[in-house]
Length: 411
Image 1 (cartoon, helix red, strand yellow):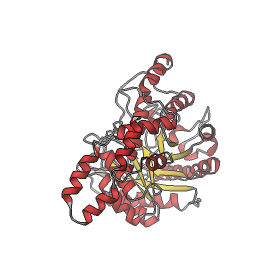
Image 2 (tube, helix red, strand yellow):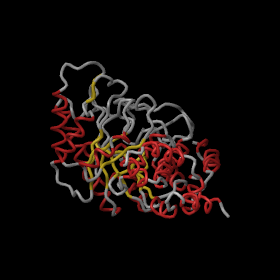
Image 3 (cartoon, one colour):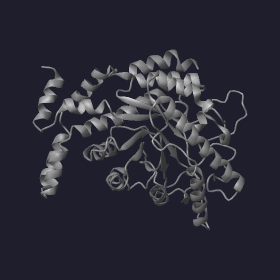
Image 4 (cartoon, one colour):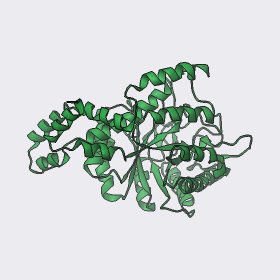
């Protein structure tokens, strides 16, 4: 008897159908961030990263062009099981020799990205890029007291709405457009209210632009702090959740964007009660928003369990967001996305209804015992069966090492 069949029998004793779990997982979409491949450099500006963002390491083979980045993405996609979307920033516009500011970008500057998406039968998610640009002045964008700066970034946001609609129309798949700004202050501010009032005004101006809400889901992402903005962040969790509710858009939680003692897994159920949909950027923060590669750790598993046990797979937009230049970038991509898929499968293989019933009955002893027992169930054998059915290499590192030797080291 093969190991999967044995695992299938073992899980059945807990009332779990492994076939159903595999069939469910293969239809879950994960939005894969393009910026892991080039260290968030982009194509439209060579400004250094700003707003608390930092990429560390200098591993050889960074993608420098659209052709190199998409070639790397193709390999990464081939090693990721399940359904995928492509997630790109506005800074990846292909301007050729045009002198076009971010306030003037148009759908035509992303036509090659659409071709790539259609080739691989994936949708595209989008992010305005409010960092690494000369018009980020004193660390501020949409909250700037300089009206020229604020207006510039409002125009950028409006332009991105139109591009997001273009992506949805071209691919036939709705586009999630996520707004995040790095605005804040390094030291204790004299005025916390005015920057947030200006941010609200800017968001109102962007979102007052007509767009098809069945094609574009606008999300708003908060942050607790970053390097250089340790004392005050304009787009705090309280602001972003309040604004999302006020404007009827979708809240987005990045699990690196909270205090170290907070966990996003604990917040998901609260947001699901009050929102039709929510969005997640899954990362791994080590002490702060360090954007380490996602691994199959406890918090990633808890996030997945909260999505699955609340029957919310069709209500949560799942995306990855991290960047590591200290290791092979393609391996970082594949390891992170596979870890999210693993966590989802692990969640699908839990006796959620039984555990919930035990909790309702107040039998917390059994909840703990059963939860611990499930940790040693033969999850790995089901994961390998999923990879096999998806036609995905189990041992992806050898494929990546060959690519590194033949392609990356020659750049």
